[in-house]
Image (cartoon, rainbow, N blue to C red; front, side):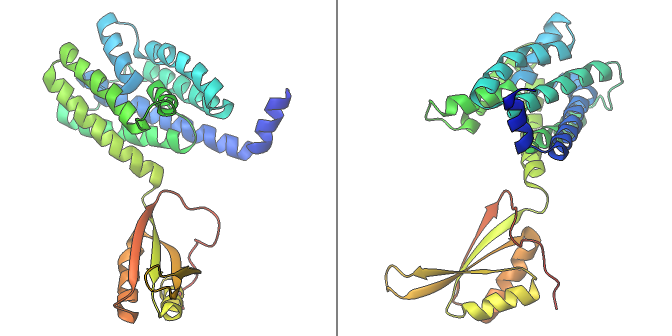
Length: 292
């Protein structure tokens, strides 16, 4: 075993490697299900390398899995050099499972031949699969790797670059499958995009809360007693008045947001309250305490 491998294993214990591998496997299989049992039989495509592979497979008769693997390999090599070994290996694992899944599922009868049902449910299943893979450190599409690298050299965001690629690819579907299928493909892509976000962020979306009030102690104690959430007091200074201020910071779930607002309103109707979305929460004391 070389030195680099030892370093990787030190950073990623075997339990984390195993967990990552399992969830990427599940995600890749789900994407294969979304493609072969919903989208592909109804001539609805996804964006990125997957969309290009579907078009090429339809025109040439070559199995979809071969194009998925071959077209992603150059991007995997680039990702290995520019992004990192762990990401590249996770992506290779996911793409290999996805390719194998399309081979195994291709002979299976599609779940539905209704293009609208196939579009909606295919987009949902595909989005869950891709979201799981991304959440656990991999990728199933080379255009995402390209977008990450181009983002460093151009003024465009990763999302804008991916969108440009996909508009071109989804537009190409109109010439191959017909414009009605291109519109279905756009719907499937939009649904998958939203489900990917939901899968990555989780159903219990967290909220960061900032409260400025002269009654910060009362509000802080009420939040701890009635919501079971920990709070942090930060020191601040009003730019206009120069007065010292105490800022309450806490994190709650989306379902607790309304109750938090009512508690603050009840104690200090004049309090300043700001709420923002958080994609991930780790460490600290985010876990709820028992409410007395």
